[in-house]
Length: 515
Image (tube, rainbow, N blue to C red; front, side, top):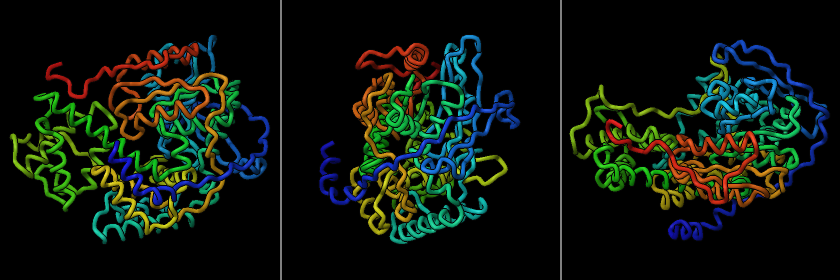
């Protein structure tokens, strides 16, 4: 903590550039919301569910103007005679399509909830089967440009090319994405959600939002505080920091990944023989990272491995505690190949080291990079970042000094926003409106992408919220019957956990062999 605060203090002038307070424009009334027209889904992946397309204003300041389409899927309540309403679910991102969540309904909530509520997943505006944002004519064009970017650019040449490619990416979006590009903010998504609430006939919103979906939830409850029935936000952003101090927020996001990685390495050593990477795991990982940072290595098992590959692989692994044993195996294989150590597994036995390509989304046979395009469109609209790309190498050096594994990648992850069109329709607060019912905030102590500090801040910033802590790993709450119990009690009856309540995670990071 002291190191991070010291670096932030030295970089205070730099971080201050991220803050830009923009007034939210007053929106004209869009009129009554027509009912959703449901019909059987025609896509094989959604067979057995209901689907719909719903028109919403492209610009809520011009409610009679052009519209954009929101795609929905529904799992009807099992007990329609005693139905309580609709649970809307968002998976996060931004850029994540949500219709497919109906197929995972049993993993989201318990049967008691599914009996009493329709569960509706939606692809937010510009994403998936909604009118999709498209910055390039083809996947090949997108891939050619994205391949020039490095997530962890180190050399002067890598940095120069990454900055140039990001600028070209932004320019392609300006040329090709059309008017939707400047109407992708979370402010508009929250207004869309309220239209959908009305359209299914609910007097107040019941909602579960994960990760970025917590930003949608926080925005909604402050725009429509009297329309809150039960809102669960799980894996939380710090809404004020994300909206008004984005560069500092990126710095702290990098710190969240470092905290999760440190916890993973501690648990590995504590697990002893049940973790393949055990035995001074922190020092071994630092040595492995620093060697690959010097330049790509050739692994007999995994081929050429770059610092981009290692960083992306480890970051992705921190999202799911179930991946920890395999992650430890991969790290031990690489370490053993580079520095010597216990005999490695054969290539056939080795767990995969998944690549981390740019986010893909949309329909199976259509343009595949809508999710990637929407990620930028939402974040660049919501959270102003410094508009001079030449500053980002300095930011990266500051970030990396404090967060040696993830700082550099986090600093460069949204550099495309430096050249993004200016967007004024965003919500930057206030965040403390008193809601009709208390919001349930759920956060894990070792969540990498939405660190526990963010969940505590979300709870403080909202006007009426209760924090439930999950003592465990992974992004958003998983593998916890205790958390699911509270989801169920809250969604059905509004029952809240006691102040200070904590839940355990049922899956240990490194299960004992044979358990």
